[in-house]
Figure (cartoon, rainbow, N blue to C red):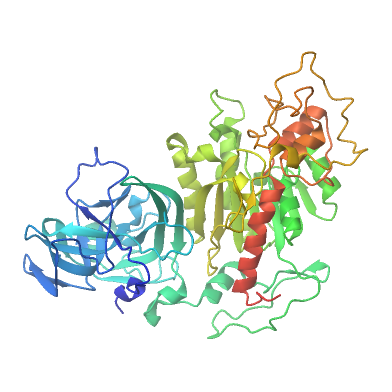
Length: 576
């Protein structure tokens, strides 16, 4: 089967096919953004003539061929191959091949394992038009001077090294296989970008393993449920918490030709289970619980945070230790969860982190140890929350390492920086959010925004300062207004109709809108999205630290309601 069939379906409802004509480049001077020209859906620009085939240096090329190219780039990615979609002659008589770009996995800076003759499709999409628009992925145009020759390639959703004949070759045969061997594509690197003038700005990225529906040649296709069960052993449609207890799925015959069929109705009180790593005060657990998940397990090593967590989630199994100690201590125990969240310490990656700390090395180890926890728990869905600073150039190697740890386990991964005010947070708070889906699982999209600055079009206005701290019940033990420090000289009043700056672990410059006093602990918690029922333990400083470190529960609820619906849809229980 031709890979062309994988990507050749084109909707003509909107004329938006994007191409980039690329020429030789100097790797030291290529800009990170390139010009893109939006053009008609027939893929031709002014002065171009479509051809059926061309002969270049004795080889005939036509639509559907898989072709090796050189000196070609798309965005920040090197392009090693294209799947030809259009053969044409340019205005100056040059023969050009235009097609879907691919790169070797070794070019992806560790985001995918570097394996011989393993390649990845590059799927750049202009999302500037917003929701509802049908946007075509960008094609790459390569002039005849940079055509190397035809190659053979297959698409598969099987994990490496299946179907790769060169995976066990010795070094002496490495060069020959690289030049002539079969190429294997298992992954699709997706970049969603918006246009800034004539330059692209990436805003969302994904590394997706091919789904069975994308593999047209049955010889290279494995059913998604088989991949899922190879990894997890079993799973329960609709969630593994049923009637008050966690259950394992039925034993699965991995050699069977069809999936085990089960009644597609939800059991009483059936929920997806949730495991909260680096749980802190339980902000993520609170949001997940509000979204309908069953909080089953959590890990944290901070004493006060654990006291707070147990107070709010008494039925959850709390491991009061570091993640690496948990993995060691639970090595002989079978622990599974449908969903895993990780919020490892983020201070090292914060833009506000300008001096070395004695905790830096431990924080980096905690961040990079997430792959071991995923391997232990084997969740269907993983989420990670981090400071947006990890997306900055100097911290990119750490982000890529985390992505690489997940893809090494054959998890598909999606990530972007989210302005949390768009999900109901009352702050100007940005966080990097990662969603990952295990082998055989469908990778969910990000939730749509629920709020905007002015509201309208189905969106609520941003939650403002005053709204966030309104409605606190009299007598709340964390809302001691009289006992809160009042300023000898009142400060400038703050606009309670606006968003506030990011809530941190300290008092900072944030105070009551009146300008007369500090915020109470309950007001801090409300600004961070905690419901009034959430309680805290520890000193005042410790409580502020727990609140400032939390992933706002009200925004977590938006994320997990969306992910729960995605799992239900995949499990055939959308109507539940």
